[in-house]
Image (cartoon, rainbow, N blue to C red; front, side):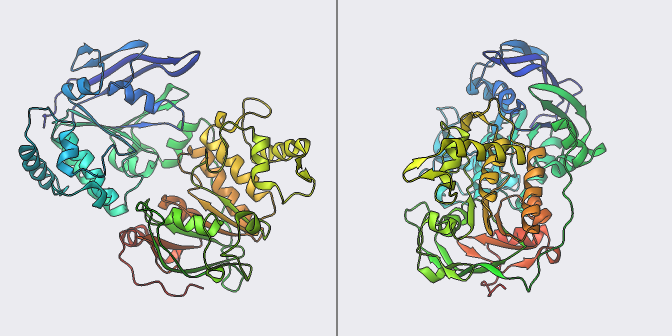
Length: 512
């Protein structure tokens, strides 16, 4: 790797990118020294992804210049970026599941290199940096953390001078995150610069020496993260005071059980699903129960069974004492259960349909005045839409826009509002703030806390441990389709939960 130098490795001078009249990036200045770990922060839509795509050659700037080691460069494509010494690890891995580790890495290497030589080098480099990999292992057999190792080692074999990481810890356990930080600090010591994108502000404080903060495509602040707090960083990103979660009384062990799951086992319908294995738990009125886990360990399959997208034996799922395992989604909604899926567009809402029409999708059959026979009363739908958008502060461009025109945070607020305003006694939410900016995330979490205070039972499935520790009364963890016993949040910690995320826990006991 390169050695540290006193000269800038990368400088951006007045970089702008336009899409019609929309400014995705507006005159951005940024500089990075060799060996510097530099954070790029901003809420959704702030322009982070557009900027790094220009650095990696996937997009071209409309104005401004990029200086690399003091020389102006035009990075026409990712191959040219890699030739300069710029590597990137994307948030969503670009790996072929059916290929081996070596074959995946070979795809990004010069064509004259032999697969056997690449295999030897990748195993040597992976061992040297504490990221052990087997060249012949197939991607589909690797964990999420191991797949990220492949992405990083692929970059290291290209001997980068600048490594760009986009949300690198979003799917890692706390232990895997700490291992990654050790690697990044070593690379920094060796002179490799790192541009680090993350919404986890505490880890930015611990890892990054400097930060550039974007808002609406512009640089609004440069700071030293160690001199800030997560709250002050979030305020710079959002531009408004961040809502601080109000404390609340926790749920009672004597409260009525609303959701009860008993002996739930379900085989994956395809080769890409995770089978559920003897899942047992309950959720009581007035409490928030949280389920942690790395993506792909059965959380989506559990949500499908609880929501009625997939049916089971009747007694496996009970709502308010009634067996519902064989009932449809609408039948469960009529019993007071509401569901918010992980995928906002396409699952929770139809992108091209208006907000009022999206209200009808889940409220038909629940509102007496929403339909007359087979006909929808659109006036009533619009009134419900107005009530939801006002109560949940859903910001939109016009009165009744299509769902796809809303930002991720505003659409999530709309979807949650649509569900909980139906008078829910049970709310099951999958990834409530995934991809949502700090301001909207805080508001959504407060909405869930307020709902529990009214007596609703809430189950939150999330990969965000900070979120779960902030709002949950009890926590359990899913790993390979198994659910750990629930424990009071106050009696566990992130390291314990992280171990459980790797499958290190005793067989589930009967939760209360």
